[in-house]
Every structure is written in C-alpha cells, then in structure tokens.
Image 1: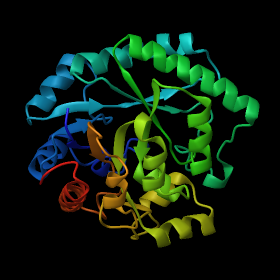
Image 2: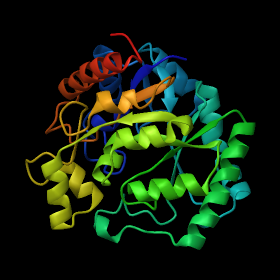
Image 3: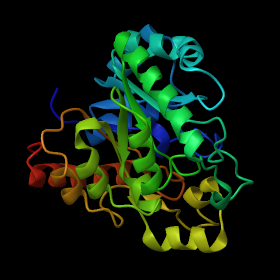
Image 4: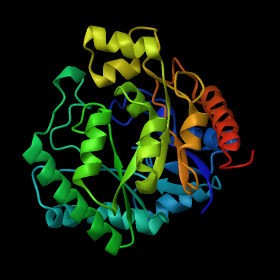
Length: 301
C-alpha cells in the first residue's frame, strides 16, 4: 500500500455533539469528500455499521473504508475481556475491508464531557502505566492474531494527551500495540509532530492530519475550556482545530520524519460546518497535504 489520502466525516458532522453538522446528510458528506478527491473515509455516526452495507455505501462514491474509532476500557477490564467486547467492531472492520483498528482509552476520558475543562483530564501513575501498557500490548497481539493492526489514538482529555504521555505509552507497550500519529493532538498537547514521528517511526501505522490555531489553543488554556467548547469555538468564532495548511503544524517536516511510511493519511479537522465550510476547508487541506507529501518524497501530486 502506498500513501492514500482519506478523510474523517467529523468536518461535516461531529460525533460527540450530534447537533453540530446534524443538518448535513451522509450523502452530502460523501459526495463532497469524493469531489475533493479523498480516496477513503473513516467511520462517523451517520454511517451504516453492518459491514456489507457500509462497504456498499462507500463504493457508491468510489471510496474505501479506512477504519473507525473504538473506545477501550483497559483500565477497568482485561485484554481478554476487551477483545471479546470488540467483536462487533472487529467484524465491521474486516467485513468492510480494512485492517486498521483505531483505539483510544476511554475508561476515564473527559473529552466528550462539555462540563469538564481539559485541566481536569485523567493521569496515570507509574503502576497505572504498567498495568495499562501490559493490557494494551496483549490486546494489540490478540488483534494482530485476528488480522487487525492496532493504531493507538493519543487524544486531548485522555490519559495519553501530552508528548510525555506519548513517551510513557510507548515505553509501557510493545508492538503490535502501535501508534496513530495525530498532528493536531500532538501540537495542542504541547508537542511537535515531527519529533514524535522521528522517535516512533517504526511503530506509526496511521496518521491523522489537522492543524491548530495557536491563539485559540492559548485562549482555551487561559479560559480553562472543555475540549468540545474549544473545538466548536465561542459564538461566531472558530475553534482550535482547522484543516492542514491553516495553522501552525509543519507538515513537510512531519512527513520527512516518516521515511518509507505506507498507509493512510487522514484529514480529521473537526470544526463547526456552519462556520467552516467542509468543502472549502477540505479542498485546502487536500492541496496542502499533497504539496507536503510530494516535498517529503512520500507521494507525487
């Protein structure tokens, strides 16, 4: 597999706040994504989840299924229990034609709680990292035996938020518990996606691409906003996240730190579509990624 550029439908319809983009149909989302030139889509709440139906719906727009978020609860249950709980998601991924299995630990996450500021996000102590790492490694191995590739999604408001958390996660786990590099979450969390890419190149199996408005991230910290309030934006204002090329992330440097990467890069820039037109922002993000990938020698325009 070479580099393929996909999208997450979160630019059209928010998965945590269903009223954000609730007016946009799945068909509009897919037709615009295809018009932009995306080759595949990740899962959103408006998509069918029965494997054949999901695959067929995407095929109508000549797109592949990239993968979808799965919430783990490994701080509360064993790897064997988690594997059993993931049966439906595993069947959907396999049946719809992807081996990418995106996970994030959600036992105690606050990213979906609009009433809790990011300053209240959960943290692990040394013993917690050990238990979590062992369970995630075993879960990754069980997934690999079943034909899936675990891609761990570090995320604001979770136990893996900062660059130090990413380091702790990678130290506590082993392949095939691998990493999803999310440029936006790394940057907002205080890190440099190019630095993370260089450090963990061999275990990065999936890439999410969004940009960060630096002044909005600073405002979110100053006002101690929740994750959702920060990304939706206050009033008519735009939020922290935006499409690649519209913020502070150096995509050329990031891709240069991923020599030989083969797989999906996915535009996943959650914004309110009433403030940030998904078609216009999607086109801008696609054009920027193509230029950066070409400059890094990973894909020709």
